[in-house]
Image (cartoon, rainbow over all chains, first blue to last red; front, side, top):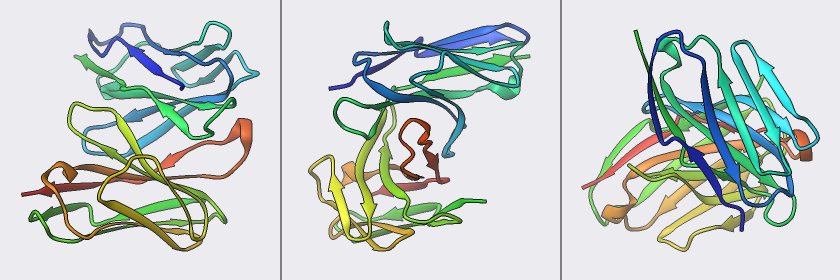
Amino acid sequence: KQEVTQIPAALSVPEGENLVLNCSFTDSAIYNLQWFRQDPGKGLTSLLLIQSSQREQTSGRLNASLDKSSGRSTLYIAASQPGDSATYLCAVRGAGGSYIPTFGRGTSLIVHP
Amino acid sequence: SQTIHQWPATLVQPVGSPLSLECTVEGTSNPNLYWYRQAAGRGLQLLFYSVGIGQISSEVPQNLSASRPQDRQFILSSKKLLLSDSGFYLCAWSVSEWYQETQYFGPGTRLLVL
């Protein structure tokens, strides 16, 4: 059964710092990995999707990488801003068993001015 | 463009009362549909998913049920709510595209059972 772990669970940083959020998964047989953002009391917003054959995806100040063989993905946030404060979740869509995405518990990020 | 709607946004219900939450998707055909629950301090829990009309798979045994009466409509129901049913309920959709399949979420329904 796929398990997804996100470290750290919470992070508080001053504005302007570059950040790395981590996501690890136990079964490397995946179709893709998706990063989401969730603001308090809101639904999840898709940020980036990396297919299993890809190494990274970029959108603005966000860069997500994937190392399928080691079961890891990182979300890099450049020059963080207070508006980046949210919970970030990763989800892995498996190829070896259930096709349904498995979610991590998320990293709660606070960027203070 | 595709949009997903959920209602109501917030619901306060007494224990033992029935429940009906609705989710509709616009701008796509034959989507995969999902119901999740997010409880305080816990992760995202998949409750049901559907790959087509009348096709429902349950992930967790509980007093909830789901139905898909139309292609783009997904309903979450209960005959008698429990206190433990409180939480944030999220509906999501995707289109089967294998490696490119992306999941999109609705705004959620906050349910408080008293």
